[in-house]
Image 1 (tube, rainbow, N blue to C red):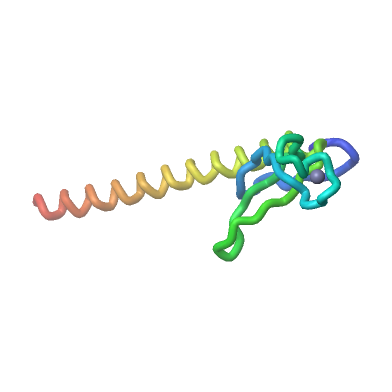
Image 2: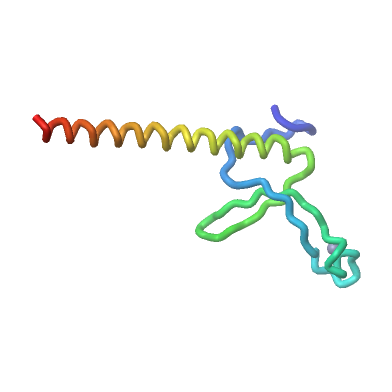
Length: 99
Ligand SMILES: [Zn+2]
């Protein structure tokens, strides 16, 4: 269980956690001056070729950041294994040709 409020965060999440500063669009809001912008931590991700963002509640940020890091780590590990497999196969082919 991660975070508070009994909310479960998935073990791995694809995307990046980023801090956004933006206007909300309301003409009467403090952010309308372009200076007092709203700060929100979001999960930025791509879906069907489009970039999207998902607002994160303050108590989700830490767990989501960790889940994103876990995914990156697993992805790097997978990539490393697959590259090692490729290297091995290429080396075998070279050895066969050399015989
Ligand atoms: Zn606003």
